[in-house]
Image (tube, rainbow, N blue to C red; front, side, top):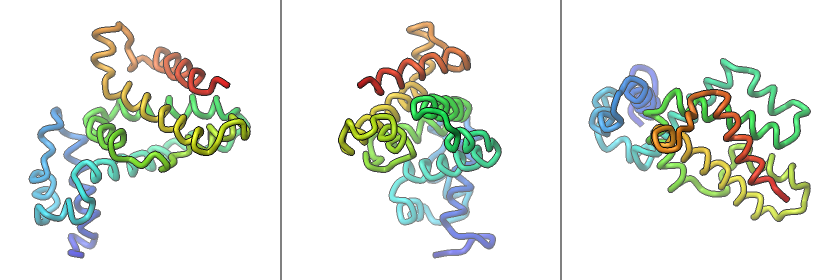
Length: 192
């Protein structure tokens, strides 16, 4: 693979996409051409390295999520705590949705990719917590589906948060409101 300033083409593309996504006011500004121009690589490299622009956005979001974990060690502490799986899911989704709302332009691209392309068996930790909650009373397949439903529902809430505020009068950017909505949803999905 080509080298760019001591890093790989993939790294250059991720850095360029991240810079553009975090600085844009309109997601349509972040085109494949704009990304590759910023990265200083050939236009075909996005598909070669990632398969699609949306898959590149997803990789950038995952890195941003890891950066947040590094900056906020309490997130890792939550997962390692003696909280119940339900409480861990509520706290985890609260932090994830806060991140998505704070980086909304990036979230718009990522959510569409996740809902349509992310494999159902790709676990972000949700499936393990769902399995732990149900303690063997549901099959692995049922737990995977419930985890997918939890993730998709919250991703879609973040994606449509502006319309939800306008239509329903529910402001998901208000931390207390967001926590109530997440708690209600998690409780609904974890019913026996």
